[in-house]
Image (cartoon, rainbow, N blue to C red; front, top):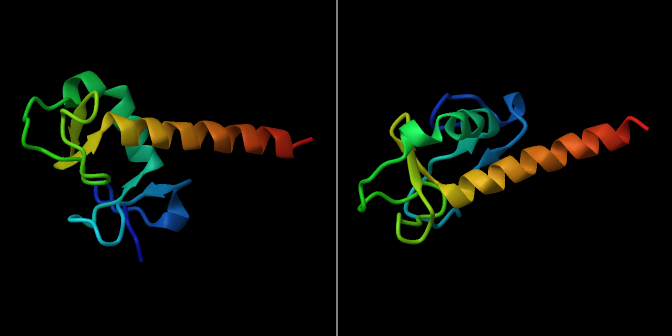
Length: 99
């Protein structure tokens, strides 16, 4: 069962979880709620450590605009954008399904 590596919530308790490829170097997953927290505090969470790699896609700070460190889990700006985009699409789908 996949759980968020930062808050421990299960997939059925959140809108979505982003996780790395199964053959990747890490097994971390991050939920949409934690991604929203990263987005809110991105300035404070940005790491200057050039050796850190995103837990989800393995990008380093040279391959992404930024890498944020949230509860010891590094997440790059690209993965954050992907998650926020999924939330926007889910909200549009919920709105349209009401008609």
